[in-house]
Image (cartoon, rainbow, N blue to C red; front, side, top):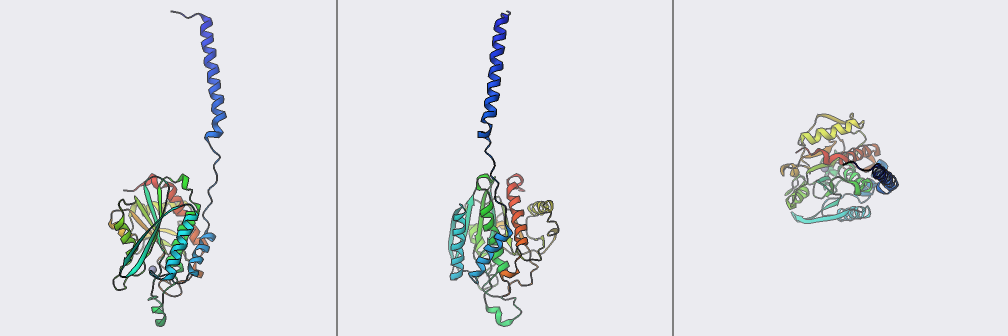
Length: 309
Ligand SMILES: [Zn+2]
């Protein structure tokens, strides 16, 4: 059957008007659907340096000391002020109270970025034998990694994270070779306490010295390591993140690797003041902290897309 022409025109007209209305509505509603993006603050090496210096002002921060407790309280306050949800794990090991601090934000597969905030109670690599029983301030070995994590807590856009990000501040790392202790004791106890493991783990240790160079750490997950170093290379840092084999180290990533979590240690172990009383905050370079912070921030922006399991 053939419709009368007038009906056909009317149907067509209604269709055209409806379409035009929808298009108009669509464009009209567009600004409501697409809020103007607010630029996220960018990682600041100068800000990170100030965060490291604040830790150095607490003095040496070995586990179980008052300065360690004060540093932990200060870390928690920084994280809460930045809007992160903070959890603590308090345990006693070998008679020493330890407190691991973990801040969480975002949704998706969990990725953990860690540093240790305790410092070594003995400067056993100090060239001066009398100083070898003194605790270290740990400007690079302790404060640098914590500073980068705290600056990340400030700049990461928690609403736009594609992972659940865990920023972990481990206690009890730097007591290896002391009676009853192993390196990474705090991190080991933390991993043992977890009901579900993070999908990936990145550790920052000794990331602030002026003469920065990161070869591959030998115990790190090869795929994840290659991904991060390649990313750093694309960011123009290929002369610092150098994809050549470096030393294999015992650090807070080991308990994660043992539990099956792909984990990477970003560490510049070529540091003349390691475990000496001269490892102070004046050895830190804001450009070094800036580089590491920006690489980790960029990695977190794409971490969920590239699980290397
Ligand atoms: Zn150390």
